[in-house]
Image 1: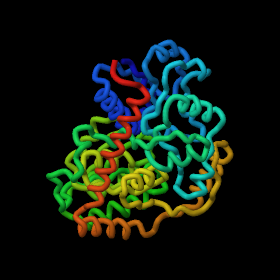
Image 2: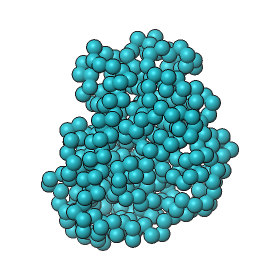
Image 3: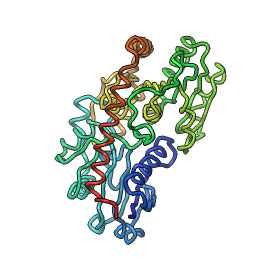
Image 4: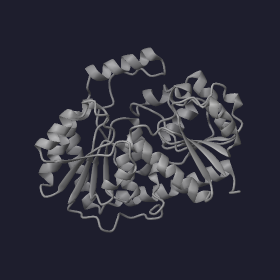
Amino acid sequence: MKFIILSGAYINAGDFLIVDRTKKILQSIYSNCELIEYPRNISLDDKLDEINKSDALIIAGGPAYKTDMYPSTIKLVSNLDEIKTKILTIGVGWYGKDTTNECVYSYEFSDSSKKLLNKISLNTNLACRDWYSVKVLQNNGFLNTKMTGCPAWYNLDKVEQTTLRENINFEFKKICISDPANDINFSQCMKLINFIKNKFPNSQINFILHRNENNGKYDDLINFCNENKISIIDITGSVEKFSIYDDCDLHIGYRVHAHIYNLSNRNISILIEEDGRGTGVDEALGLETIKANNENGLRIYGASLLNKIIRGIYRVIFKHRNKYIIMQIDNYLKMLKANNYVQFDIAFKNMNLYYKIMQEHIRQTIGEEK
């Protein structure tokens, strides 16, 4: 069998993890399948014949359910009617700035995006990585949705394991802190580093960069880490370099896919949620939600360029930081320890349940191996 995978892996390490895990899931179900990968952000008009000869065209993970998903995020082909093969999504999510009712219930897809969603949903469910994605699709009239989780949730070697990794050091000898995506959270991140350094003075602390474009954006954080003798590891554009987390006793930070990778390896992980994507993961798995920002302020949503500009300006001028975040994290660490980290057992059981749903979704859409 032959599958075309539309990939969003350009720079961010998390996107490379999504694609890698998608391929492994497909290969576990269809052992002899051929996988061809194309970027989502290029036109595939010249690949139409190859697409139609494949068994399925797969949109894998990431925030592809954007309000302007087609043809902005996913270019595909100029005429969707010319695609004759099955199209399916695997664990795709929305792109909500927060999880307020205003954001969720005002989330609208462009007409062209609805055309793509209609085409996909003719033959299969729209697979979602969290329940907020389910809600926004259903609010836009797409009722045949399926909550499958993100493919990056699933390390196939550990998907059946519902307890923490056996050799975790609960004194947290190795701690990894993942970087914020949003630069307005940099000062907060520095406070987090100081807190972790003071609370765990004998630990090895690593600061992990997931999307460093070497454009100076992270210079202040890098300098701060160097001054405080914090090791810096750059995993930009790589799935292999996620292995820095493999023997991590505690991950804490801002990157959703650092959080997901650690959970998939049955490590202890605490996510500081910068937007609705992170909240969606934690709520779906039954984990604590700790938000970088307070969910208040301007409420303007929609796909128009003007709305995007207004939102961007507002976020720069009015920074609603969570001033209690260090207290929240400290409290959560104490709560986890006092209760033998049972929240993670619950999260791992949920991951196992959603994985079975994802397998079923793929088999029902594509069929059995030929």
